[in-house]
Length: 242
Image (cartoon, rainbow, N blue to C red; front, side):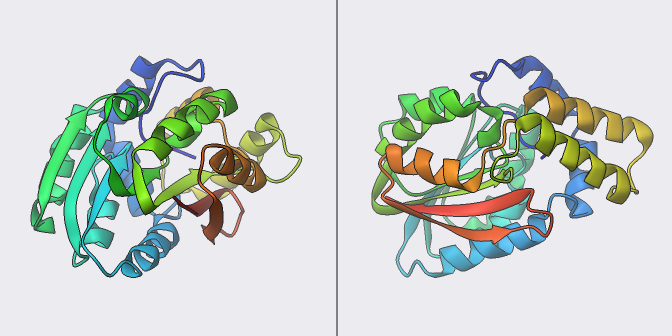
């Protein structure tokens, strides 16, 4: 459930989130080892984007270093790419990773919630990867209608986020995640594991799939479907039509 920095609406300390991800080497190690199932998740994102047969604009919220996103966008009929993230360190890498996309690229440092509220342009695809869950349920409910406003008619929202089982509490899913991490994240040093746990337990607010669907529908996304779930049912990719 490690994720990119995001908005300070769930009671978390945004400065702490940003400080954690300035230690980018830990996050890259986790990604490169596929501990967060980036491989399966981004393969699903890529398949969804391959169904778009016309030039499309793409908004990447909580973009991080945009490495995985730029890989699935490469070769797609991309009209423009815009990234928003709190970490300037990550955005510097994002500018390098997206240089080959062959379209207009803009990378902006900022809180994704505030950035979306201030936006006036619309996008064909809005993507949030491992960031939305930094908002508690009330924050998600406040944010998604603002996001719906900037997704073009006929466009789509794609989210890649941690989930919890039906009836499972936040404490229960975090405990289940930690048991999985302790038994499988064996390539991390004890200090790296400790930092990961501190971040997740302090900042993560997963929702059951049904709750994500209800939140999206209430925000004006008429239909949603699951594109991917990991084997432990800890992460999912969801696509919602606008």
